[in-house]
Length: 606
Image (cartoon, rainbow, N blue to C red; front, side, top):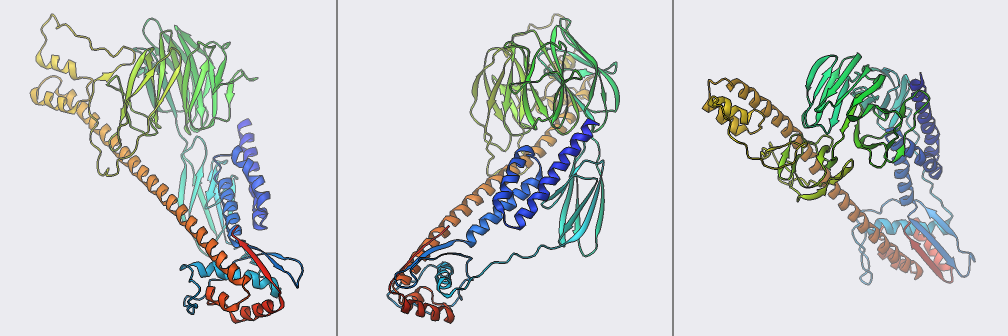
């Protein structure tokens, strides 16, 4: 009930803001609209409708400034005695084939006559008493489009319009649109529609996302049990499971030296998971986080220990829960206990999740590698780590000491290695800027293989004594390859032992590695192409800014030329600057020059 009330209040507030902002924009009260929308953008940073309205205000303000680009003061020291100041809209550009100017006056650049025409009409209107007022085109009433989304509470976006009601009604001009709906805990949906003369009714049903389990520990080894059944081992201290069905579940993690943690929870598709009872922990510190989008509930085995997120204390509410309702997407630092307490990193997302952090009482810290790219390989002391980056980051538990860290990703330049000192119970961050290769095309090359790195042990090569007992050749060879990702070595093993006991296992291992490599290559290609598109867009933006600066300089030249000709009170000089001056304007200026003893004209771009 509280969740529904909060969603309704948020939706009502967004609708109120958009309803108040639109009349202000339509009546050109831009400052009032900005004052309304600017705080709203800070409160609702992911609200597309408010952002679109804010951009619309900025665009119309820029257009208004262009329309008022000629501001002048005209002083006539005979009659009239005062100096009127008039702000005008630009006049239409002069004809494309102007009469040639006299030789003593230099012709302006190709687009200067447009701005000179603006200045000339501005001065003429002052004396002729004629005013041009730009009338805004009436808004189109549009075609009625009704969108119903199940379940209720989803944010529906069509073009620059946003709605969060059970029945969202839009008035749209004819054309093609993308209708999208999003709701935390559900897969976002979109539908392309064509709006014509007939009214349109749309229905969209969102699919709920199932709960996922994420476990991060500093344990050397361990196993996970879900609902009393083995779910798998800890790999490099981590475990992940997706698609957890609705209902009540029990989760248990066991490690070496009697380390253990367990709890029960209830999951429902599209909903925040709910912890049942308490968290049990033995020989480890335990933190359990139930997360859905911007909401998170935090639970510790020792309820008396303080918990802070990004340096801010999270108190226990009246329900006995440490609840947060305003988390942004991405990584968040969570600290449990005092100065020497463990620090964890939580990655939030739109899907419901149960994340478990376990910290054994060991001299370890956490390395956070940030690359802003998925599928990046991390090397620690030149040994390849077993997992790749997800959402551009990866968290690695390490013994407290100094390490050399580098990263690689096909299609990207490899940055230099960096040194990092891992401190006990601390998060030690290190960032790499991966730049795409300009000529990256096709399928990325395979990442060079390297020995796997196990974070629970120091990365030191240890010589192994040969076994005392004699084992078959294929078993001995397979023992050294069973955890390998070296495709060449596995293929060589199958050629050497085609009918051996482990040949089938080697084949399955090869198929698994190749499938993972294909998936990684596809994602890497997409990310590299996206990075190239972003780079091209930035270059285009810079070119547009340079062009705008050139046009500004041209406007200044045009204004200066017209001002000098106007102050001379000689119509022939004005015609040299603006050959296409209308006849009525010429007659007005003749009378002006005849009546005025002297004239000073100052024009400047806004």
